[in-house]
Image (cartoon, rainbow, N blue to C red):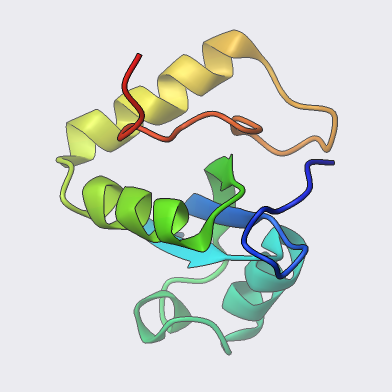
Length: 113
């Protein structure tokens, strides 16, 4: 697991959920498993309460909270097609060791290469 550089010692994640009605929900958390449990228990976001069960279909990890929040903002502004493209690309790349779809340590789209 990666260590955070923001002083909290936690990683920050942006995630996509697929709701029971087929819609996608994007959010931010420091604990993917607890957040998914909260969404499925009806104590997560208001949007997902009536769309349970939800399934986590994608996530990205960040060391800095600000980077995760910027990415969440960017993903929320993507079209459904673009979000599905993230999920599809991830499915083609396989699963990480935690069994959840997503990219560990990648995803900072604001970093210049």
